[in-house]
Image (cartoon, rainbow, N blue to C red; front, side, top):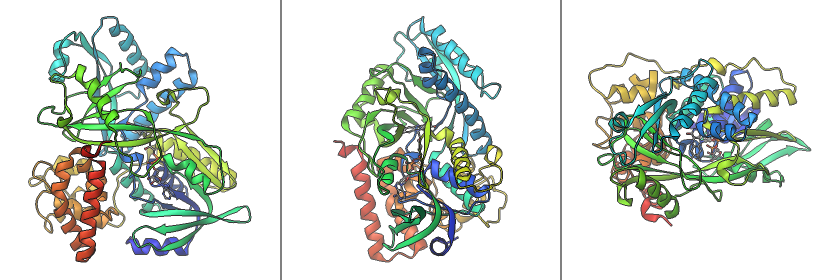
Length: 532
Ligand SMILES: Cc1cc2nc3c(=O)[nH]c(=O)nc-3n(C[C@H](O)[C@H](O)[C@H](O)COP(=O)(O)OP(=O)(O)OC[C@H]3O[C@@H](n4cnc5c(N)ncnc54)[C@H](O)[C@@H]3O)c2cc1C
């Protein structure tokens, strides 16, 4: 469905549910609710997943570190969260196999007493998955550990304990969820901001919306509003006069290292000793080494940026772990995301806050906040259960526990993928069954976007035609993760991307130039050079 058709439908129809926010939470709810027979609309002020949902560590996990906290404080509630996380981890990997995979992780060990401590903890992690585990944890010698991560500092290394979690493509998962929701009848549109909540007396009547691309204002009629705005949850509630905040936000920064010096390791690393009692991850991701993350109280903003202090924190910890220690010039990209954390008056530091979610109803406005990516499905199910119970609706049963997330655009005809020509693994991992459609488009746009990356010019076409990409960074950050991997390569690929988009979208020269300049400014603002 074209953007103009989608807009018409949003303006003219009346919806059971209007979801505000197109991240993991909003897209998950759209899929659940549409699958249960509700009439659903979703709007996102920026691009789908442009908020926290494309800036995660990309792990599908039950939460090893929450398990440690649960055991240390004998906290059964926290233990339940880990158990549920592990259950959702299994469902996630089953339902979206092309976008997710099993990932081996290892915790390096420097003191002998850590071996039983970590190993027993990880065995408990395996046990809690109750037969839905991804492989048994085990001890690895120092020699074996170094073979898997050659740039690990070998001094004092005693060995490592290996365990398994999942890894996934977060931004593409949101697009896939949006496609699935739309195939079940939902209407979803990006670059549309809700500016006002409309009530008829006390009853929700819908919302006023601004199309940020055209500047047009219009209204969407809906009987129930779902606030799935992540870190913006309290800001959105304040449109309706709510005052008492539900959330605290903290920023999490990732850096990506130069792959020539630090090639992606065979296993991910979990570093369980930091100066502020947290854990860090060093992960193989898209043929690069991804390191994260920090956890500091943060202001809410649409484009969070890393600070010098946060990058130095990561480099300082890597300094003792890796040989040679990485320097600032070894960083190819860095980016920041905001965690929406549920307020808990009993905890102090944000790393100690529970990663559970809450649902709050305020006269027809349902706010959902907190949680983690791994739990998006369960959060959506609970929210739709609650809405339908309060609204006395009679929905179909929830289908998402075993619903494949193919991410296929509606109405496309598939052909088998020819194996000989392209990077088949990349296309299948990104597009699943739709890989053949992208391959076909290479007849219209041949070649790669950048010589050092597998991403194709045809993927820009595909992103515009089938994946709702409207701006260069919709393509270069979220349909493809280039801007999260390499700042300079993104600048290099930008003119070609704008050229392809210009031809496809019919931009005039002035608009094409404006897009190019706006993107350069945005990239520069978020780049390492601009760290404050
Ligand atoms: C650094 C970091 C690492 C993480 N790593 C992991 C991990 O490895 N595994 C895991 O399971 N979880 C992880 N998480 C948690 C996970 O990423 C989040 O829980 C999840 O992405 C939150 O999704 P969301 O949809 O609630 O919020 P968001 O993705 O932020 O979506 C909310 C959307 O609402 C939109 N919006 C706001 N106001 C309006 C408005 N007025 N009109 C229209 N739209 C609006 C915003 O633009 C935004 O796109 C991580 C989080 C962070 C910060």
